[in-house]
Amino acid sequence: MTDPAPAINPYATPRAQVEGAAMEAVMTPFFGVGIYKLLLLSALTFNFYLVYWFYQNWQRVRMVGKGRPNAVLRSVCYSLTAYSLFKRMRTNSAALGETLEFAPGGVAWMLLLFLLVSMLPAGFFLLALGTSLVLVPIQRQVNAINLKRAPAADRNESFSGVNIVFMLAGGVVLALVLIGLLLPA
Image (cartoon, rainbow, N blue to C red; front, side, top):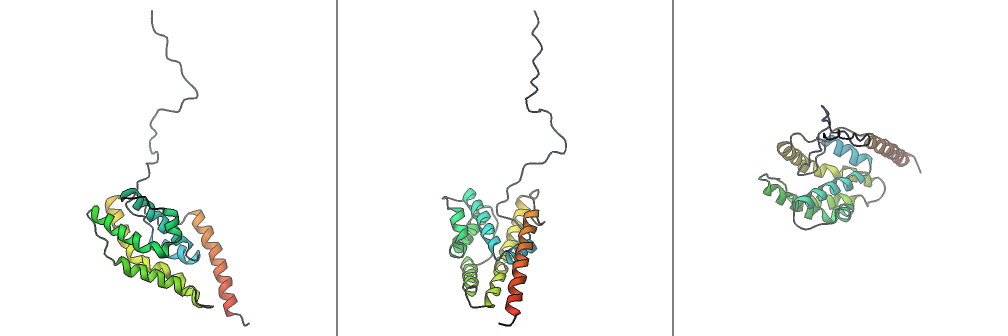
């Protein structure tokens, strides 16, 4: 007696390999983002993008390092926790055999200074839109390490639809603020 043919399940997922299928996302050791994207999104979102930048970097620190820092809380309070993040980033890069050459304390103080500038009276708070300039040297080094360690990973240099919406909304608000500052009282 022969075995009956296996039943075909029409609800089963396909088993064939599809050529050209998307590759799995490659995780980089640090959060990579294009320099112009970092600068534009930070300025046009009134530095709210920096909260996201710090969150992404804290997430990567959590995966590699010891302890489980609360990435959400630490990213919201980034001006107070920046030193700790930068110090851990240097430690993690050394573990990878790479070097991040910057002074964590100096960069953290610069971020805190920009935060204090943002609290000055009318007009001076616009200087705080340059906060992300402090992060550019770090981001350049991080991007170089990511390229070396994960060459197939996305460079995160292009703007998504969500990025564009936030930049347009922030640009409109910034334009209105500038008009309001220039109009006579």
